[in-house]
Length: 346
Image (tube, rainbow, N blue to C red; front, side):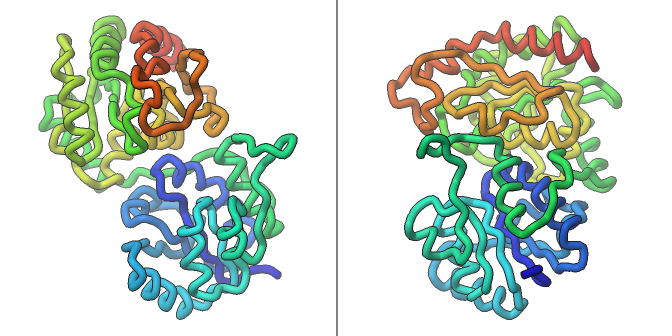
């Protein structure tokens, strides 16, 4: 069956939504006459604005039973004949199931998830055990089940003039000169504390990169109290010139424009890393408890740094042994050397 009206459920994490863009592009090129709508968190709309791989964005609001019922009714009214469920959870498949979409495609992680899908796909396995693969490839394997060929693995985001002007104004008010080369620093992580490189490490690396290479560090936390508090600790430990955006614009469109201005991005293994890759910015990623095989793609302008400690990758949100050695032992000097390598090929 060739879908005529297709729903795509986006993954929730920012970086995963970016890594889903090659799958969206494959669907658009493989099904040029289909109406394609994506269902995602409200802030994903600004993230993906300008992407021509879909026709409509449907915001996902609320997790209560009445929210589910309202979404199911709205989806039923749009007459979708197929749904591609990119996240693994049972909750992610509930909307398409409740809307009675005839074809529901995605990975079958457990019996409940298998029940909610009409066409379950086995997760990647080797010798019977699930194995991590690139999230780009993981999502492409799902959409290939509809018979669409790949359309490249490049990540796709777009920056528009109005948010770019807002980004320029925000940076100017913070003290950034026009055209000044920037080191964009994002020291937070929505996943959990285990992904956080120590603020003192960020500070030392930023000071040295500013001193050696002339890049102005711009510390840009997400607009929430937890990440702003982390950013304040980073800035409090710095001695060189820097700028901190403690009153960030909440729009992801403005954040994309700031990323596009950066000469280099320094970040934990979190969403801004993938935004930087999509916008062709060189990026240094401090990798802690997560398995690098999930993101082992498009590495030409990346340096992914990690310490080879015995307990990683554990995948835990909080360090189970309490000392966070995988990131504490990752010396700031390694980030400075990675910056030298990336800037030398700029």
